[in-house]
Every structure is written in structure tokens, then in C-alpha cells.
Image 1 (cartoon, protein in one colour):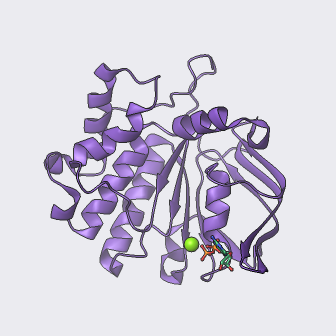
Image 2: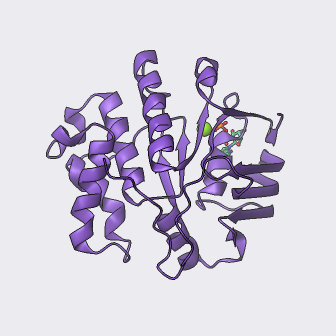
Length: 247
Ligand code: ADP
Ligand code: MG
């Protein structure tokens, strides 16, 4: 097994850090406010939310449906922006970046895993995992294949490279989606209710896999769930209710 270290910007000359729990925050959110417009009404989603995640941490954000979990993950993932507050990722003030810079940050530092897997049905497993690498100019073609194969091996799905997603079970599809998130060698993986469409056995297997990858690849994980049964598996639990962190 090859130990992966972080690939940051080539201009970033810091030593690869093989640390677990340090006070080194990879995500710093302060006082995030976000609401949605629904017809005439304003729906508050985040009401002054603050949170820090340390490098190497494995954190679950737990909250009822509608508590703001997806909105929170979309903020960290630079998919959406708040009305006010600040977002700092790996020392970078995200809200000061333009769209291109923000996309680059997302592509190079962050991996996503979704509840509904979000694989492209007409692409093979290998092509799905390769897809985000195609828009990353820092990954040459020669390296893409290695990254795809390593990521699929890491999630135990090497034998499916030529299959289409609908030939796989839900649990297998989510493993492929995890491989896709890892292939970019992200510092941070965000998983929005990754087990919500899986039965309990597969849910635990996906958590096991994420825990294993957190330990082996030193990737910081933040995953959301409303399943209290998964709470015992995680070292850090953050409760969200009505758009703020409760504990
Ligand atoms: P969770 O992921 O915990 O279920 P969300 O972040 O999706 O919570 O939603 C937080 C609140 O924002 C909820 O009240 C939800 O109804 C509302 N909301 C989320 N997305 C939208 C949207 N696109 N339009 C209107 N309201 C939304
Ligand atoms: Mg959600």
C-alpha cells in the first residue's frame, strides 16, 4: 500500500504533514448566516454558525432534517456562499476569491460524497473516478490512470473498473463515489449523508471505510447524518439545530 501524502499547489513548498490531532485548523467558519427565498418567505438555514475543524479530524455533524447540514457542507465546499460571516480553508479566505480561484481551491483541496452517489450513468466506474481529474491541470494524463487505480484499490472496487454504475449495488456505488472524491488527493472530504440511501450493514461498512481512509491517507473528513446509530463510530460529533452548532 502506497502512503499518500498531500499534493497541494506546486507553489506550496510546505513539507507534507503527517499529523493527526493538532490545533492546526483546516476549516474555520465564523458567524455564517444564510437564508433561502421560497416565494415570498425567507427561510433561515444558518443563523450565525461557527465551527473549526482540525487537520486529520474525523467529524460527524448530526442534526434533524432541515437543521442546516447540507447548507453547512455546501458553504465549506465552496458551492454556495453566505450572506455574512467568514470561511477560511487551509488558511485561505474563501470569500475573497473570485469564481475561478474558488473552483481551483475546490478542485484541489476538497472531495465530495453525496447521499445519492451522483455517478454519471453512461460512464464506467474508472471514467467516473477520472472525471474530476480531467479538469485539474496539475494532474498530467500519465498520472491520472495511477490515481484512478489507486483510489479504486483503496475502496476495494478495482474489479469494477469497466462496469457501469447501475451494475453495482448501492454500497458499491458509494465506494466508487468515495474513490472519485479521493482521486484528487484532497485535504478535506465532505460527505453529505453518505449513508442515507444504504441499509444499516452497508452504512457501517461505509463509515469503516471512511475511518480507514482517514487513518491511512490522513484526509480530514466531515460527514453529516441524521442517524444517531452512527454516533458511536466517530471521535468528534457536532450537533446542529436550527442553523447553529449546539455542542
Ligand atoms: P439539512 O441538510 O439538515 O436537511 P438544509 O441545509 O438542506 O438542511 O436546509 C436548511 C433549511 O433551509 C431548511 O429549512 C430547508 O427547508 C431550507 N432550504 C434548503 N435549501 C433550500 C432551497 N434551495 N430553497 C428554499 N429553502 C431551502
Ligand atoms: Mg441535507
